[in-house]
Image (tube, rainbow, N blue to C red):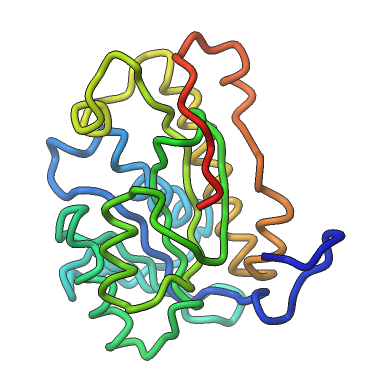
Length: 221
């Protein structure tokens, strides 16, 4: 995290080189809550407006982009969520990057719908994809951006995360995905600390009048 008083720490103010959005492959999962990470990757590539060299390799859909004089790799693992670490480990080996240079974007049940939170490391927070990456990398020192999807009191977790967005949720998640893309782009340009200071605690304005159920607490993982 950044140093007290809003000052950025040199040790953590790292500009990532690899950005991984988590989700599940296949058309049946395209519109589900668990695929928020995929949505953010797509939105970033649209916002960058740069030519992308696309490929399918290392169990991922990949896009290579040069922006700001830096070569960047965007990845959507095709391993299914629980095995995301297998794909990320292959990327790390092939690209010779350190965990701190890999920014992971994922959904989060324990954040209110439309809320963003960025961290430079820490536990999985119960997210199976993040847990898989921690295990295969042997480190939890990679930055991650969580996109809040909330939690339903009436629906089992698996059914909820693999369910589609409701009409009320769609404008909220669209606003959050757009801000998440801006947060990642800022991290690429100015560093993770800078993006954390700017976007942590951000929440979609459209969520303020939403009738969606309130989620559980917000752990500091």
